Length: 194
Image 1 (cartoon, rainbow, N blue to C red):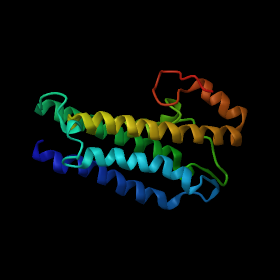
Image 2 (cartoon, rainbow, N blue to C red; image 1 turned 90 degrees about the vertical axis):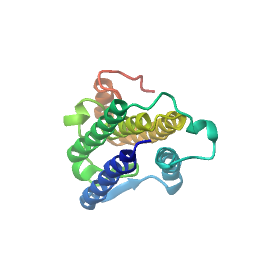
Image 3 (cartoon, helix red, strand yellow; image 1 turned 90 degrees about the horizontal axis):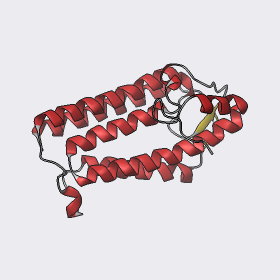
Image 4 (spheres, rainbow, N blue to C red; image 1 turned 45 degrees about the horizontal axis):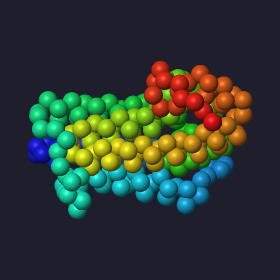
């Protein structure tokens, strides 16, 4: 793995985390908040996925094996994919404004945002995070990257389902109509909603 991986990818993710912390200071107060147990059901897998990508080596040997030979252009393409994913989350965060929360929450005076990235997908922060995980996994180029992306996808999909149930309860037909018009995670792709 090139020396740049040690600094570039951690730098991208740390910069994103610092922005996330800074931006969270102005969030509205919560009217309803998910339980700590529910929070752990998506935070623990996301942390595991991040650890799979961040560690130099993991104890399960075959997960450290390369998927393809390392090439500089793949590394830089993966860096671009990661950066674009993280920037997409920031764009979404700006549009969400004070309605944002790191946990599934209904805010006081919660607003339904359906403009900007929210006109492309209902959960652009999750979309951006998945793209960033994919980019980081491509740069790693090992089987553990595949596992990390699958774990991150499952954790975010679970969180998405809880969030959609709450938003449907809160906004009613307005949110159901939004779901009919805008796909969940992939732009231009309609997902069947149960």
